Every structure is written in structure tokens, then in C-alpha cells.
Image 1 (cartoon, each protein chain N blue to C red):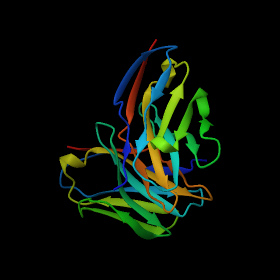
Image 2 (tube, each protein chain N blue to C red; image 1 turned 135 degrees about the vertical axis):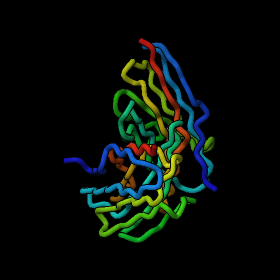
Image 3 (cartoon, rainbow over the protein chains, first blue to last red; image 1 turned 180 degrees about the vertical axis):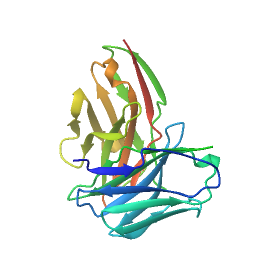
Length: 112
Length: 113
């Protein structure tokens, strides 16, 4: 069973569209994250939720809105997509006695 | 602000060469340390971790890392690399007090057969 799963794996869309990426974890973790990895492989934290509550919100345009319906899910909605949003977006979760992050397979977003 | 530095951005080695990738962090408190590997087109996978105890930790695929507290370093090593080790390597630090993870900018390793 996949521990952290995100859908879709690939997303190709036009500028100006609105899209969502879903993430689910079955590890029982309390904390979930969204990261953006650009073409240079830099990994940048975007958001973190702990038990459905936002705890980290880095400098991200407000076109990006995370939503956590429960602690096993953290979805990312992006409004008015721009070319610069093209990247790979990774979901992750962490928890347990020792904090280890587990990553999803990534969603490759291409904005045309 | 906390930061994690990986000074080697691109490393190219021949098979069987030894590897050492540097990682330094800036936080003075208690930390948990990690190395993640990202194979081409894949997600990040945990390679090894340090929480406490023996500062020399061993991970999967023959990798090891040494925590040197006085130097705020957690360098990754492998005595003999293989072509299949070609990947991006990320060092990460988690402050013992919270949920935030700080990642280095990554090191791209290319192993030439």
C-alpha cells in the first residue's frame, strides 16, 4: 500500500486555469506538507498542516490555497495558474515518536 | 533563520570512487538529521537518519553519515559508488521542537560507468 499518495501524477493545463492536486496518507501521521521543486531541483516548503490546522505558510502567492478536510488529507488548489507555477509538487507527511518525513511520488505540473 | 547548506552542487565520479557530500546546518539546538535520495523521475526517499546516540549512522545501499556536533555537519559518505547511485541527494534538518524540516539545495551526483 502506498503510504503517501498524490493525484494526478501529471497535470498539463493552460495559463489562467484553476487546478487541484490531492494528497492522502495512510500512515496515521498528524502533519502534512506541500513542497515545490523547481527545475533546478530546489525543494521549497509551501505549507504544513498539523491535525487539520495550518502551522507553516511560507511566502506563497495567495492563488495557492491548501485544504485539509481531515488529518489524512491535504489538498492543494491553485487559482489562475501562471507559467512560473510549472514545477513538481510533492506532498509529505510526518509523525510518530521520531519525526520522519515520507514523500509522495510528486505531481508534475506544466502550465502552457 | 535556520539554514542547511550543501556546498557540492554537482558531483561527477567514476564507478568505484569514494563519495563524500557535505552538509552543514545553522541551528544550535537539538536537531534530527536526514539524508534523502531522489532517483531520476522519482520522489524523495529516506537514505538514513540521525536522532541521537552513535554519531556514525549507517543507511541503505552502503551509505553512511557522520554527525559532528562541533562542526554542525552531517556529511554523507560511501566508499565505492555505483552507476545506480546517480541521483539528487538532499540533506534535511528537523528541529527537535517542531514539525518543520529544512532542506538543503541538493547535490546532483552523476556516476560514470
